[in-house]
Length: 339
Image (cartoon, rainbow, N blue to C red; front, side, top):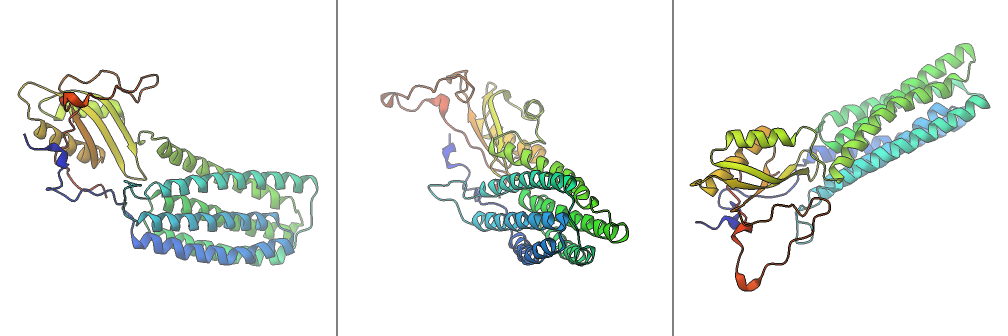
């Protein structure tokens, strides 16, 4: 039997390099420069006009600038290749950036809610004219940044997170315009903090969704589009010679990069290389899992998975006994690169 540990290097360049593009990096960098530049103008305008909506939006733009900077750093680091210390490269960095984005959004929403309550209890004068001008300029800048981000990969977790931030800013500018108009014609200043709270509720919902998605990756959770029971049933149905699957683990190293490991048992006379190759093809085609490690169980491995809670680690193999055939990894031909 050929050495399965070659891991199909003769068939494909099996690399863990992340699928990031210079376009993603460029649009995020331009968005950061525009957002950071206007943030200072909006903060000064909010303080001079006395508008909580503008100050809150400036604070939101500060987190946007940080989010975009993190996203850019994620793409920049993501372009680095793997090494002996980081065999997956820096792909997980972008998930950390997405997590930080979500947390900062939630903290910002809490701060806006607190300030809004204080404003309602103790109303402060608001200069509607300057507030209106700054809000309109902010709307134009945010529309430009949002359009820039749409030119990137909109399904990418960092692009998506940045778009959530900018969309919140865009809505904040609209809210500030509405508040400035109402204050100018009616003099009713409570509309400023009220609209800030409404905006915060909208942003909170999106931030919570982003937080759950990034946490699921950090906790090595199964990707949302994959159901393990369905995956097992599909493999058993579509793989001739496959008898059973055990120790199935599916997770994501980063956004859109699911991986899987599993033990498989074969029927009598089944060719391990053929079965493993078929499993990899089904995983790739039906579930988008382009990288899977398949271990063929010849009946001598333990039944319990050491990754399950409460299970002890297996005893070290006896070097005098040679290689345990029950733990020989059979890596069939990969269907395509991870990237």
